[in-house]
Length: 451
Image (cartoon, rainbow, N blue to C red; front, side, top):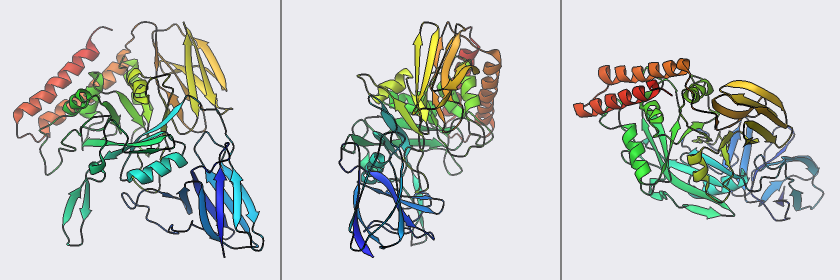
């Protein structure tokens, strides 16, 4: 075995961070020096810096590393650097005494002006998240502190909050090479909903309430209001996932009342499809954009597996979320533009099969770019027709529109929350139950009001 210096460069000729895999026939895999060949893949287990994808092991590097490799046998070198770069996949054979390998990546598309953001990850130390962000082609990663129960060696279970002490709020916890990691909080009720509270200048407490051993004497709307007072952005996570017999919870109420800034899209398995409910929200006139997140909490998910693309044009990526100019994507970029009643959608790197939607119905489709005249009131958005998922947030066309069927579906979910509060909520303070019921009534009235 030879200690081989391996370097992977970008189009400037300088080493660039990548996700790296070096292997040989028969399944042998070669980690860089100082890195373990095998590592845990469970939730909250040594998260960051490496990945388990099926039987494959990958390691994030800064573009240069040393790897013990055999000479005289075919060696496969693979490297990935996010969707803007073509993957590297080459086979080489080391000659006798050869101690260096050099490779170069090529761009798949021009992303100048675009910013790539992962709005949620957990348990990744900020410095590991920074390396992985650069290797996965991300500009911003939001690491969110969330309570974790840990069984200690003394046989007691303790609650800890990984990364809370690294909370950075509105500034990066760490940054380099144009990438930054920001630490905020993930606030959870087991039934009423989950919220990512981003860009808050201070943590919003409590981080969790409810459950068998706690009361329900708080509220998601309270979290939203506190986050907004602290100049933050509120993202509804695991939206419309059934829990405790209800599928919208107080998070839906908050969305209808305008307290939710965005809905998160991930590629994690779900009990109920997300998009049909998002379309109902939009068809009911509730203007909530989409963001993409990996929701990474183990070494089985890469940062940016689902990401948010934005084009700030002088502002920040958070400004794009607030104004609804976002794309949730598993890779492809989608650009949606408007000229009067004419809408045009373009996908890249080409060819990307694109669909243009009006109020949930496909009005144009094709490879690369499509356009259509849309005069109907409501919303227009673009999505990929096949291949990796990508979906723009809606652009609102014509006057206000409110589909009675969508409104009725949302009202049924709000009624589920009302019944839960009356029959199952554990309130030590009756005023807290009354407050939730009042918010449900306010959301119902807003949906039922004339468009």
